[in-house]
Length: 405
Image (cartoon, rainbow, N blue to C red; front, side):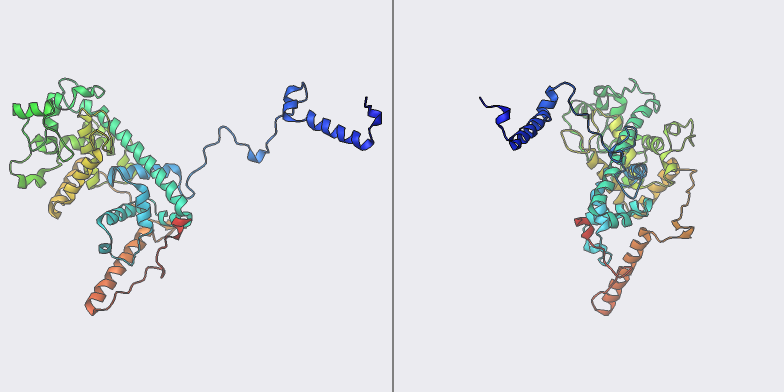
C-alpha cells in the first residue's frame, strides 16, 4: 500500500496545493462551516446612496425645465408634437436654403423648433455639443412634459365641467355611457354644426349610431349660443367663439377657479403666468375645444391614434388647419377675441437674453438673421439674373455630423 513516506517532496507539495484549491472552491466553501468567504466589499466610489436622486438625463438643461417647456408647447404650439422630429428638423436646417425649398411639413417643424428656441435659448448649442444622444434625451424629457400636460388638462376639464352648467341629468365623468348623444344637453352641444338637434329624426340617428360622427364634424358648441350661422359663408366670423371653449381655456391657462367667474383673475399662478403668456395662439384655441369635445362625449379614452376610438389628434389638427385657413382679418379677429376673453388683464413679463449682465444674441435671432440674409441674396440674384450666393453667420453651414455621433 502506498505510504506518504514513499512520496517525494515535490509530490507532497503538489498534493497540498490541490487540497487548498479544493477547500476554497465555491462549492466547498458553501458546504463547509465557518469557512465561507465574507461578502465582497465595494469601494466607496462605486456605492450609491438609496436616497440619491436619479442621474440627470440631459447635460445642458434641468429635467423640470424641459418638462415645463414641453407642457407649454403642447398647450400653445402643438398638443401632439413629435419632439425628436422637431429637434432634428431645426438643428439640420440649412439657412442658405429658402423656405420654398422645403416641404410644408418641414417648415412647420422649423416653426416649432423656433418656438422651442424662444423658451430654451441654449437649445441649438446644446444639440451641437451633445449630438444624437442629447437630441434623444431632450426630446424624451419634452415629450414627458407634454404627455403629463395632456393628462392633467383632461382631468382638469372633466372636474371643472361639473360647475359650468345646470346639467340634467348631472354630469358624471366616469359614467361615459350616459354622456355624448345619450345626454340631452351634451348631445345638443356635440351635434354636428351641419345637423339640427331639434329634428327628431336627425337626433335619433345620432343616438342610435346610424349617423357616424367623424373627426371632420365640429359640434354646435363651437359657435356663439351653440348656433352656427345660417349662411355658410359666415362661418369664419363666428367659428370657435365658444363659451365652453373659453371656460376651458381659462381653466387650463389661468386655473380652474377663474373658469367659473368666481375668481376671474385667479389667486394662484396659472400656466399662462408661469410661462409669461398673455396672448392666444391658434393651437391654444384648438386645444380647449378638443378637451371639451372629449369631456362631454361618450368616448372612454382620450387617444391620439386611430385604434378603434376617436382620433383626437386629427380632430385637433383639423381645427387648427381650419383657423389657419381663414383670411388674415378673420384670423386676427378670432385671436383678439380669445385673448380678451381668456388672457384679459395679463401683462407680459419681458425677459432679455443676457450673459454676465450684457445682451446676448440668441439662436432665434441668428436664425432670423440668416433667413433674412438668404432672402436678400435670392432677391438680388433674381434681379441680376445670377446664381444666388449666401453665407450663414460665421461663414459655415450647419452640419449633420453631430447626429451621427
